Structure formats: structure tokens, C-alpha cells
Amino acid sequence: MRKNNFYTLLTNPFVILALLLVLFVFNSFDPLPNYDENLWSYIGRIWNRKGIPPYTGAVENKTPGIFFLYAVSDFLFESNILFIRLIGVISTLISTWTLYKICVKLHTKLAGVFCMYIFGLSMNWYLFCGSYFAHTEVFMIMFSIIGFYLIMKCSDIENMKWYLFLGGVSVGIGISFKQIAVTTFLALIFFFLIYSAIGFSIKEKLKGIFFLFLGCLTSISLSYFILYFNDVSFYDYFEGAWLILLNSGSKAPNFKAYFDNFWNHLIVTKFIIFYLFIVLFLFQKELQQKPFFLAVILWFALDFVGVIASGYFYGHQIKQVIPSLSIMAGIVMSNLTVNNFYLKSINPKLIIYIIVILFFPYIQTYLTTKFLFKPLDSSSKDMGAWIRDNTNETDFIYILGSDEKLVSSLLESGRVSSSKYFNSIFITEEKHREIVYSDLLRKTPEIILKLKNDSVDVDQVYGNQIKEFLENEYVFFDKISDLEIYKLNRNP
Image 1: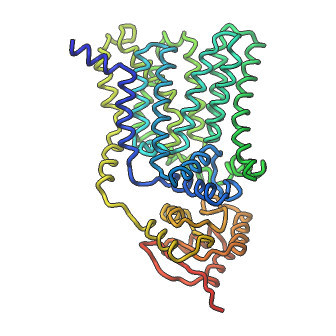
Image 2: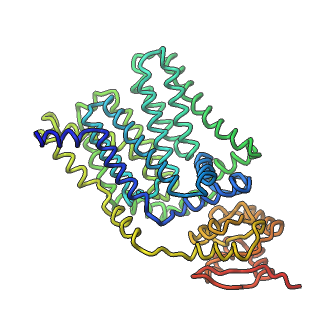
Image 3: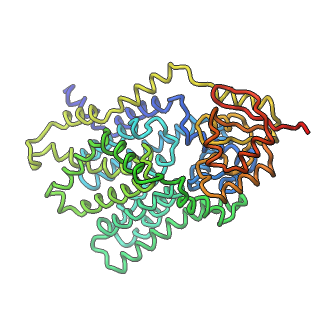
């Protein structure tokens, strides 16, 4: 009886969510701020406190959803990153629960249980930046999964338009957190046509696609209108959120870097576990006859295109394919419990143990524990405090480069960058250098920060004008850790 009770607990979705909640919250307490978290915290801060919106006041290649979230966080808790990570934890739990419901509808409850374990544990992997629940992908994934669940409910013509509209709205919100969710939206359309629209006429299918597009465009438009009322023109939004993807800073610099990143993140890592499940899913004859078979494969394939698009293969980017992979793996593992799958049936409880052993985030949990007891580098906070003590609130500062310490120092200083190009990532053309130079002349910074011995970066990235501006108008003042401080020379 005790064994049965224990198995019942192991397969109870709410117990699984509770266990994952503990794991998520623990790993979210990693005290090291992520580079992106510092970037978005700065954008949220100047929008909330200074009325300087993204795109016109700060260049970053994201759609506005993440900026809304960080601005609200700054308004409520002065950019407390743990608040946004907690929202991310809740979002990941919602994603886990919704995937369970999808698997129950596609296959069985047991497939949903296995899917919950696989998705929840793998989302915490160090490979996937598992402690950083404040990334765009976390929220993009949640709204994308909800979109798929909603269109699975449109089983008749009467309720079709509402579920499809809301499904489109949901994925549109996902796109408003990250542009690459457009590949997920394409997968949503195929999922509808292959799985949900069985028995629908061509006219009804076209009508369904129309409502998906209508919902998607509605939520994207609403996200822009928030910017519009903050004096961001459509051109500024389109250039900053979409055209910027053509900027070389948004993609790997060359094919070698692309291939190296692919190899180092998707081949010689723990990610290869998922390849086994893909193969097993593809070669199960009984699944090939199911309506969802091709729909799930296309979901994975299109999201995989999204993952490989930039060529950087950052861990948080890879998360985009985890929902569809978890569904495949959950279904495959559930088939192992019956005799119709090449092998004799395996006890479901044993499968749960295997999943936990394979997918538990050992490295991330170890590092979080280690970092909780390790003194943090305080150079950025020290630099921020020094700038606050030596400048006025209305003074501008500027950082030369894109190093994490520089961006963190800008955030900690409480000051505003002289230019919307507040780091060097997207300064890739002469027109960008001209804008920065013009901004430096118009809003001359009291302080310029750069890394020690980083003159080559200044020369190559910013050009001779800005290099000469630094040499002629500023004097080296001091150094904190490896960050150099240059003060405006006010002597005649």
C-alpha cells in the first residue's frame, strides 16, 4: 500500500509542480546577475524613472514585452531581479502544467507526467542558463504553449473562432517577448491544419488561419500602442525591434563561429539525450498513424529553425525547442510501459527514476549552492557608488565596450548613458558611430568608463573620431578593479 501511495504521489501533477517549484526557486537565487538581466534592468530603469523609452532611448534587439516587464519591476521593486525571476518561475510552472494537459489530450496522462518531469528538470539545466528565469524565452515559451493548448480545444465550428483568436493572441504575446517566436506561430498554423482542423472544409481552415493571424496581430499591435503613447514612432519600433535583426551584432560573425557554437552547444553536451527520443518518436509505427505525429514534428522542426537562426546557440535560446521535445520524450517513455514497443513493458515508477537521474540539473544546482556561499565581485557596485558620489543625477556617463562589468556599472550608477547605443554590441556601421559621436557632443558625459588596456576595441569599434574625443577631452582619473575612469577635462 505504501508503495502504491508513493507511486501515486510521483504521478500526481500537483506534487510534481510542488517539487519543481522548490527546485526552481532554489536555483533562481543564484546571486550572479546575468548579462541580459543587467541590460534590461537598465532599460527598464530609465524608462520608469526618466521617461526614456526603449528604441528611442536604448538600443537592444528585443521586442517590447521584456522591457514592459522590467519597467514594471523597477516601478514596484526598483529593478529587483528576484521579482522578475519569481514571475519566470511561475511562468515555467504554468508551461509545465499546460504541457501536461496537451499530452493528456494527445496521448495519455502518463505521457503528461513524464513530459512534466522532462520539461521541468531540463529547463533548469546549466546548459540552458537554468538559474535565469528572467530571460525572454521563459515568457515566450509560456505564451506559445498556451497558444497550442487553446487551438487544441477548437474541436467544432461554433467555438473555433474564439479559441483560434485567443491562441493567436497568446503566441502574439510570445512574439512580443522575442521575435523568433514567429517560427512557433508558423508551427501553430500547421498544428491547427494537421491536428485541430480534421474534418474542416477548406473554407473553414482558411477562416481558422485568418483568426490565428487576427489574434496574433492584435496582441502585437497592442504592445506597440503602449510604446506609441510613450512617444515611440512606428519607425523607431520597427527599426529597433525588427530591422535590427539584420545588424551583424544579432548573428554569429562567420560560419566557423556558427559551426563551433552549434557543435559546442548541441552536439558535445547533455542535449544529445534528446536526439535519442527524437529517433524513437520517429520510428514508432503506431504513432505515425496518429494525427498529432506530423504536427508535433513540425512544431519541433520550426522551433529548431528559431534556435539555430542567430548562430550563437546561447543556452536560453535553445529552450525554445524544449516544449516539443518534452512532448516527444513523454510519449516515447509512456510507450515503454506497454508491450507494443519493441521491448517488454517497464514499470512506470522505474521510468520516473530514470528520467530524474538523466534530467536532474546537477551542475546548475551545484553552482547555485556554491555561489550562495561565495563572496561576489563587488567592482561594479563599487564603481556605481563612486559615480553616484562624484556626479549629479542630471549628469550623463558613457561606457566604451560591452563587457558585463561595464554594463553592470552603468546600471548600478543610476545615471543615463549619453547615447542610446549604451554598449558596443550594435555599433557595427559608420552610421552608428556618427550617432554615438553626435550624442557625445550633445550630451557630453562627465565620466567615461572602459576596460583596462582596451584601446584596440575603442579604435576598431568606435572609430577615430571617438578615440580622439576621449584623448582630447578626458583625463584618466582612477581605476576600480580592471575598470578605468576618465573624467571630463574642464580646464581651459
